[in-house]
Length: 424
Image 1 (cartoon, one colour):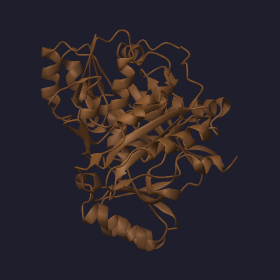
Image 2: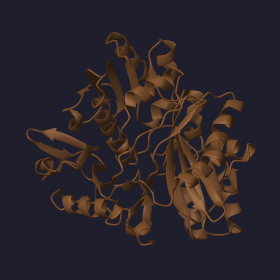
Image 3: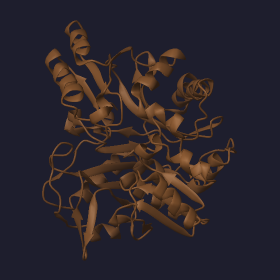
């Protein structure tokens, strides 16, 4: 079969890598992709939000399955367009993708169906939000309602920080129309975890839990990014805890969507925080996580294409997912200044040397090939994933391999996974 993957980042490289392992797949295309994927897939020169253009191309080239990586085309209705044409596509439709496209919509569902989450208020005017902040307790969380590439959430520890966040989102329009409304919610204490679920709208298959590291600097300092690293599994999420999450959050969420007239098909990403009162929902996403995919997919032994096709065809069975027992750690190498302002075009050194290690995976996110060299071409440049015998082994190895790579202005966190390890 022929598969089209839509997107161009590290998550999409991981999807291409995993799909390539399926014996059923003869050819993979990626639109628009990046040069680091060329060994596995053929690039298609179409923008990821050119929905009609992508559908036309898929029709002409008789694509058997399309897999959508990023959230923007999902929110804009790419699944609806493909489905209307009889093209198989993996992902939620436009109505379902609102759970990520609108944080207000997601929070309203959580409140309406009594799914554990933080208390919140919604504001459409900066003056109303600023007035609310005067008597608020800190810290609190301020979120742009719409899509902001994972960067639209601010944890404000003071009135001054909160005012600045409201100004950036609602007045300076840092995220454009995504900041027309904001959610201000209580800050919850605990470990954040990512639970991704494959679902056909009825059955669910939870994937291995992962933990992302959003902040740009060590110690979770600085502004949020699209993700600076991740690891899986998470020692604090035992089978019993995962069962509790399923009963309190995952099944109720799918049931709530159905009650709202939504048949949710694809990946449901639930961002959770493990509080002293149990798991609570931070947010929903309508797609694979990035960089969570770079540690979850390398551990998944099942054929991902089989699973996705079962979802598309409404026949997801109650099967047992099989996992590599090793731990996976991914560290993102970024351009200095990301996520705000950064330069590109620098030569990346040392990539060829890592090919000799069989437990290292390189997922390109923002690179461009020039001759025999790769150049930086984005904020997040590379994700380096290592499979090790336990979390500490994987962490130690990934940082030793990073020492072999260099490019000007290279920045990465040096503490991926360490916060949890210190608790043992």
